[in-house]
Length: 122
Image (cartoon, rainbow, N blue to C red; front, side, top):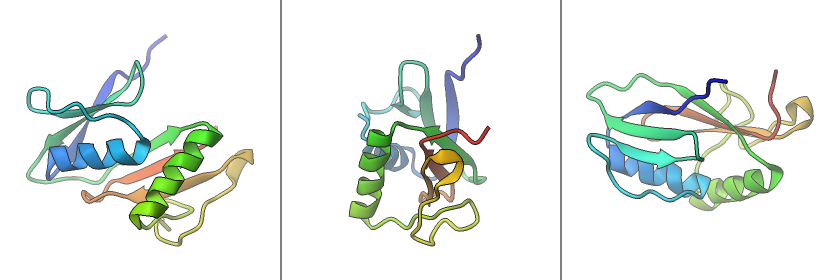
């Protein structure tokens, strides 16, 4: 079975981006590693923030438990970060209830869209 080990997340400021995502997801940022600022999400996935002069916007989606969803969503609200119920409505300040789960989207400073869901869409 294959699994995604890491991906590089293009950023204007790799450390600020890594610290932001680590804080929102309740993870630890341990500092740079070579040219990257990695955030370890679990034992198999690292999001490695790397500085790029041009950043093309990407979408990153994570399935979490209901408890993790509540904690992440609360941190988003506490930070005053706009969020939304869909990829084209990232600032409608609503969550969705698709496929018997809950979900929301939020942007980061690089223009990436981050999605947090409790149930897969497939």
